[in-house]
Image 1 (tube, rainbow, N blue to C red):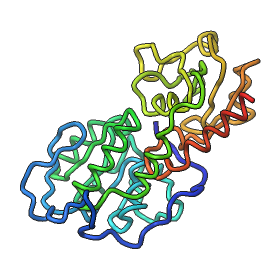
Image 2: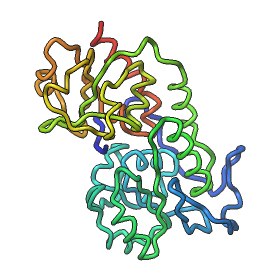
Image 3: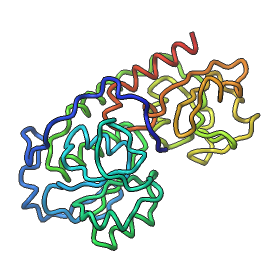
Length: 289
């Protein structure tokens, strides 16, 4: 699920440059001479023989992650890549309809995609044009940490970013309470909710929420009004991809506590993870009293 956050909160400041090589146990100082096969999260070969220095990102989370780690490498992103707010790069339409011809013309060293955010058609077209593409597959926080660490050390020749370790630590504590039966809608008319095998679902479990529709076979089930609230003790309404507000959303949950939250805190795997847990916990605690 893609969208835009509203503010940067306490996200770490942008570094001025990304070193060709970085000290530390995760650095890859000899990437320029590497001849071994590099593969993305799906196992596809990524033809890189040197650290990526011209990067196009088609995933908002990854755009923010690169911008806070190797900002000078970003040459283009989608219009949905709204963070950091001061990011000044060329825009290439959306995540589902990127301007493939323009991307090819930019001659990037690497294009960043995600299995859920982007279409296989666009990935195939870029690869057919000889453009290296790295596709991430992230359904849990642990996968996010491992995927981003490998991306930066392998493709960028950079050490693991400090914000990534900070994010992992922020989410390390166990859930604060026994599970609360909850629902997290992502769309209305029709109602669609977060289900099984999703990054958001994993974060929800870490927050002490039991998603009542996670046993359905779909990752984002479509529900009737009656099914939406059945067995639910808490509704968590994000502001993306559907913009739920105090006037649009809580009306569907009469008698049920509602927490209005930043969608970015639930769906983005990047620097925003460092503050996401505190934001979500505060909103949930306020809702349930």
